[in-house]
Amino acid sequence: MNNDVFSKIAEIKSILSDDFKNMQSFEDFRNWKLNELVRFDNGVEVTKLLDVKNHMRFLTTIPCRVSFKNHWHDCVEVCSVVSGILSDKLKHRSAKINEKIAYSIGEQHEPFNPSYSENCVLIVDFYK
Image (cartoon, rainbow, N blue to C red; front, side):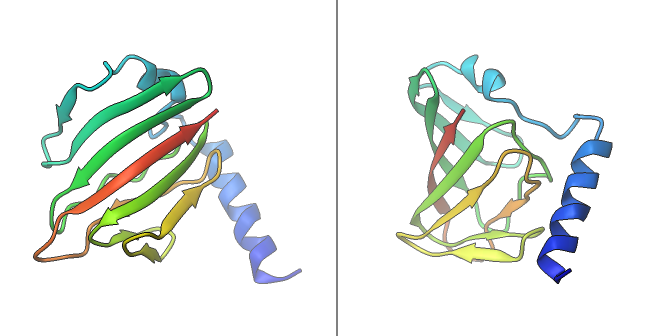
């Protein structure tokens, strides 16, 4: 077996052993009000732009050198970079303006803005 297979097996084992404290569910996001700005303690700002049956869209701003904690979702997440750079501390991926990072259902990730001078602005789409 190649390293990709072993990596996926390790990821699945990690998900199965998780106690779900790091899961942010699609239904949790349903409770957010449309067009309401939510500010987190770490300075991240999120506004829900769209909420239809199986799709929600958010405008997210991550300040310089700020990270989300390690988490995962019960839905697909696609992050499209509008400005700045988005990195992922767990997946060792990054994306610049007009690029995307997508996460599968259950895929753990830790988004991070590596910049010292520019906020990272994203359109974040969740699909159930």
